[in-house]
Image 1 (cartoon, one colour):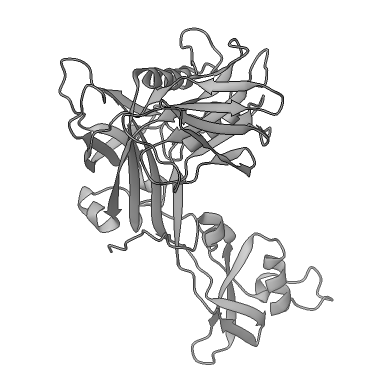
Image 2: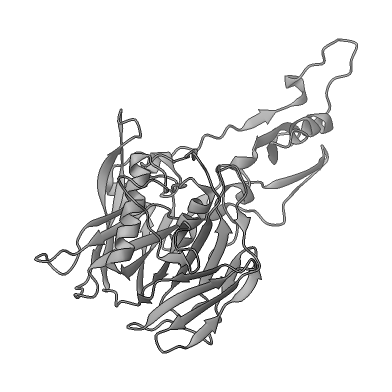
Length: 411
């Protein structure tokens, strides 16, 4: 979620994930000034850690300015220093063979820009994170944005294992991936009315992934149980999306964060829900843990996060949901089964439309895909050409033809 959320910060507004009940927030800032935006996260996973640097923009339609010429490093409490590689476009990465976060260690982010400005995060300790006890779902319903009607669906929850005094504050992010079937996939290629042949490879199934950009956090307060149960992650209305038509997967990542980081994310959530801006001083001041060393009064957006992480993947198949008696998703896709006679010439003096002209008329718009021919049963004479809109037949528009390496088909 960090990558998506802080990218949204850079674009100003907070862009919210598909199929959530929260409305997008698109502020117009008064007295606007471009500020440094920093997104960075290090964990105890053996993976390259990323820091992204940019400058905020006045409106979501603008392109954020990437900071491409900075020197970025991370130090620990013993003075060890790790330099991040400049990968271009404002992206800086660590080498996973040289650096991995360790629980209990404290880390500080350093940024030196080409104009001589030096930025430094407050030191952040990598806190231990509780295990994930369970990720599960239950039937539920949710109101639409205007509260006028409800949709039935499933709500996904998470339970944590027992924590400790050092892991009182939890944050989650998630990534959804689902397999779906194209409503009308391409099966034939058209050359002319006498040369129509099957495609080399039929692409019937696609996969799509979406990262969350909602803020999910929780805390274990003194006197409470040292674990969290039934924390809501997301709601899915099957009639509004093709997520649950075949097989769905959600990967939930759980972070143990400091009290200061919890306050940051909670304030940011409050700003979004109240329709304020991230520069508002009242009632929710969104304070970064990154400062300009020489100019502490400079505003900086973002938060350098340091956390151990646990993750859990949950698969849900369409067959599992049958007994819940939920509404079903219907593709809004029209099959255009046409022949030249459907488009008579404007004048009797003009020749009738040919099959080739009919094909060119649909394909020439750029909006349709030729799917298949229809033939008369007894004579095998061409009777119709079938076209559908590209969004109903093209994996490249609706998702990806490539199955993720980790995906397991359960149906």
